[in-house]
Every structure is written in structure tokens, then in C-alpha cells.
Image 1: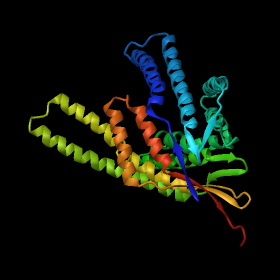
Image 2: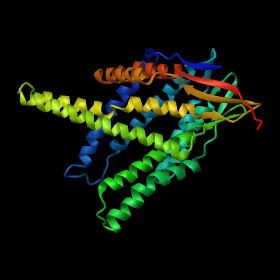
Image 3: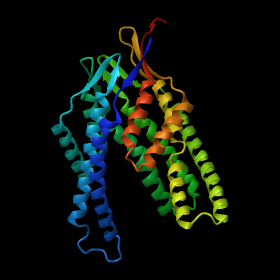
Image 4: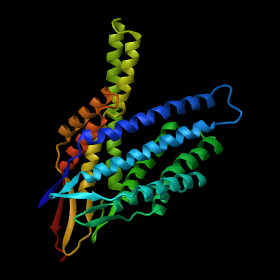
Length: 352
């Protein structure tokens, strides 16, 4: 028998954290951009980047990681299953230690330490969560993520690109290289997600059971549909703007504003549908091992079209309100998705 998850976080609870982070982020971000333009000006400062540049950058990182921390606490504490809440016990001192050491080591090692930094963050949040007095544990290793990131980023972007376009001075069509990069990104999405879903709860080991090529095909189809629909939507929008512009009723400022809005809309036009379809696919392929003849499985029984329209409504409201509506959009989207996500603990026959 399946039981659905419950999520009870409200936008009003997230709003104070969001608005504080939003304001504290915008102020140093403005000054950071100002410093950046001074660095890229014709007369570059002889001393290079000022201390203020690094100070603003540190403040931005601090605000970002602080928001992640408090949002994670609110989200985890708002999860329920079968009437029991998921609890979290995070130690802020340990979190600060992970962030500081992770950033320093990532800089010193020129980015090599990043996979282990991500591993420590993932482990911190999952190990701090518990359900029915039993803690969760993350089993992913930084070394494996390092291999994934190296194969999916370093080789296609740096090695192939440098060899083909610099050393060999090849006239290879740029779209062929873009296809290679896209394929690498698709594989990295799948392999990283598979790496992240490696969780232990009691004696259950929860993982993805889908094969590499099948998952790659699923992600590739969603990306292809997204590209086709975005280009189609952009073409139709351009035609409408051209017709309106030819009438002389559309001022120049109005044209610029409309194009900016359409750029934002078309950039993520298909994203909600791709998210729903991929979420359903990976939820159905998230399973545990068999323990005492029982196996935990997941599923999603929401309607794709209805959920697509609902998510788009929340996105548009967030855009229209310049981000002020984000806490309510986030909470309502997560509530809708998780309330239609179910878990089952089925008896599995092990006899042949």
C-alpha cells in the first residue's frame, strides 16, 4: 500500500529568510559589479583587484550559504510521512567549518577539492536528518564525483576543445563540438544525480536502478524537446513583435522591455514540463535493496499537464513581483510535487 509524503512549509515562514538574504545579497552584488567594471576598464588599476572586491565576494558567499542552511532546516522540518515528521539536527559550527575549509581548499587546489567539498555538504544535510528516531546516511564518495566531473567537464571543455581548436587548428563545425559538450553535460546530470541518490536508512540502501544509456536517452529527449519548443516560441514571438512594430504602435522602450521579458520566458519555457517528466522517471527508478523480504520503492502520480501549468503560474508570479513572491512559489511547488510523491514498502518474493 502506498503512502504519500506531506510538506507543510508556508511562504510566510520562508519569507523572512528570503527577504533578508535577498537584500543582503543585492547590496554587495551591486558594489561587486561596480568593482568588476573598474577592473575591466581601459585604465586597469595597477594593483589589480582591490580588497573591497574580495570583501564583497566573501559577503556574497556568506549570504548564499547562510540562506541554503536556513532553507534546508525549514524544508526538512516540514516533511512528514505517515503522520511522523522528519527531524533535522544541524550544528551551525560544523557547517561553518565545512564551508570555510571547503572554500579555502578549493581555492588552494585550483578547484580539485570541489567534489569533496560537495560530498561534505551533502553528507552534512543528510546525516542531520532523521525519521522515526532513525538517522539517514549519505554513502557517496568525493573521489567518485571527482571522476564524474573530470570526465564530463575537463575532457570535453578543456582537452577536446584545446586540442581541436588550438593545437590542430581544426575547422570542425562548431555545432559538432557543441553536441559533444551537450552530451557530456547530459551524462554529468545523470551520473551526478545517481551519485547523490545513495542513501542508507536503517538497513535499506536507497539508490537509482536505471541504466546509463536509458537515463541518457530520457534526459536527451527532454533537452531536445526543450530546445525545439524554445526556438519555436521565440520565432512566433519575434513574428508578433515584428507585426506590432510595423504598425508604429509599439515604442522603442516597449520593444526592449517585451524582448527582455520574452527572453526570460523562452529561456525556461519547457523547464517545468522537463522537470516533471524527469522527476517522475527518476522517482519510479528509486528503490532500496531487499531487507527481510521487503523493498522500498517510490513513485509520482501527479498529472503532468496540470502540474506544468501550476508551476508556470508560480514562476510568472515570481517574475512579475521581481522575486518577492519566491517564498510562496517555492513552497507551493514543492508541496504540490511532494504531496503527489508516494513511498511503498512491498513484500518481494526472492524465490526463483
